[in-house]
Image (cartoon, rainbow, N blue to C red; front, side, top):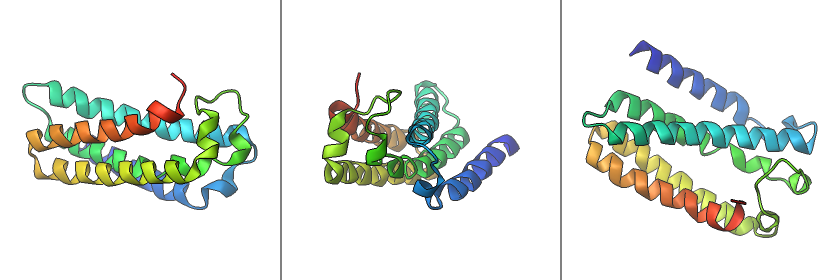
Length: 152
């Protein structure tokens, strides 16, 4: 129990520290790509943890709640790291269309963040069925961006 609280508190602290003028923190475009990839990796890891719990016959709702909080916090972080100076960084799966469709990316990111917030609310209810339903809505909102803007 305390481990989950510590993880959630650490994630919240990191989120606050990292979310401060993010763009100013990048010395090189490669640093921005590394940052956004790390944010997406943590987000994806916690989505996987939620999914794993939802597949269990007795999901650990505390673990789901903790991961849902981390997912919500992380969903806000990567977007500032998609500056034009990162367009030509080789170590990125972002397609060139990302940099030509900033309004669409902002819209899709906003929708995903709204759905993630709903996932966090559902998790707090302790209702695994509600979490499962919203989890798939969140996954679809992620796919909406991946389908058009991320190399396979």
